[in-house]
Length: 370
Image 1: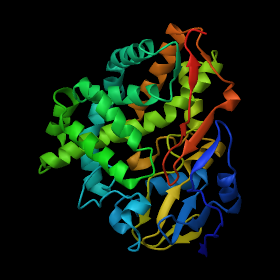
Image 2 (image 1 turned 120 degrees about the horizontal axis):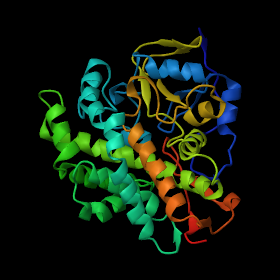
Image 3 (image 1 turned 180 degrees about the vertical axis):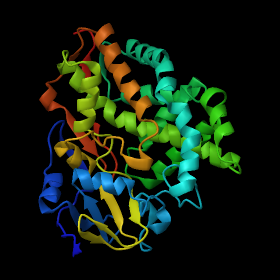
């Protein structure tokens, strides 16, 4: 085995660039090797995978786990953007192995293709209501891209929609750089998740493994809302921008292309090696932080994109997120056939706060009636 090369670039800094502009960081990482090391924001090194086949291997390897308990001991949890450990807060994004499989089995039936297709009419109706409630000239990135997905995500678990304003405000805090704001946002969304009654909320409460506490169920409901919001909110502006300049590509293909080019997050969530691991002939020591560079892999992938991950942690809400994106484009095309960008497409800008967070459009000014 060999050591992964260390690359002196920072893929975790804040970004601000054109909508389709690449900053070259991912290409520099890929050029250095299929597995490389860079300096981690919380100190030490992180191993980044840029090769498609190795990415799928890593995402399915049971020795490379999600539990933050295996993060480097020197890491500050806030600086690294880590959740609590699986022992402290069991969840789909912290558990591994049989415990993760049991919890996943409780979630998957709620979000099957059949169940999501059954929600299609309602999701389209929510998109239509919000778009028709917008002024003729509107910045869709200022409100709609946040309000629409959070409305869907409160509606499904039966959280009263008079909480949408509060939820949307909390979601906006998540895109700031202040950890205190992010903590307040999480607390607000946990409380809202606990307010869910009927439908998906009650069914999840019935399906979770025996011994799951009420607080843990509320956290699972929060996680569905939180993860679903971050995923769709980050993607929606890019999808709508593309839809406004491309009226010919079928909706499903347009959404697929946009997710491949602009995945909800540039990297996977943190993973850690439970033991020394070999990946593509490269040695990863025990407790090594590992990321897959989704954006770079997607740009060169021959197989399905990794926008929603792969392996046992593949996003359980992927079908719902795709439905939300398709519904927004469908309603925009059908109900606002003359809608146009108010500025040239090339002038649209994207930004990100850095770390492993996704990027959003800074603005999406639209004339809904041409």
